[in-house]
Image 1: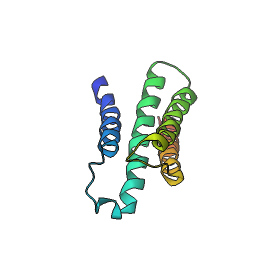
Image 2 (image 1 turned 90 degrees about the horizontal axis):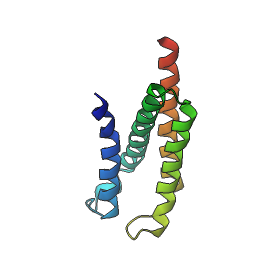
Image 3 (image 1 turned 30 degrees about the horizontal axis):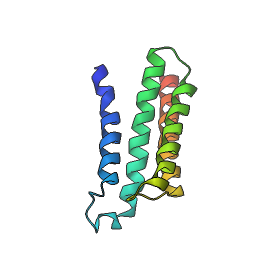
Length: 113
């Protein structure tokens, strides 16, 4: 069961490597919503993993959320230095939105259980 928590981490690593080596087809990014949805899903799932771990280890959930938000910020700003990547404020906002949505769902779940 605990190995399932690695799936979002592996997806994040694979998506980053895929983008860093410019492996997307040339006409692929015409679907602007795919990039936004990808940021929301990837960072939302990373936040869900962080929230699960902090819950199981009895660590404040704010620690997990701040960690994933920091990863999102560092990830986006690191693109200023990568050849095939470029910084995008909207990508950063979508990543943070994914983290926020995961946190909201986590709080709703905690209230219901």
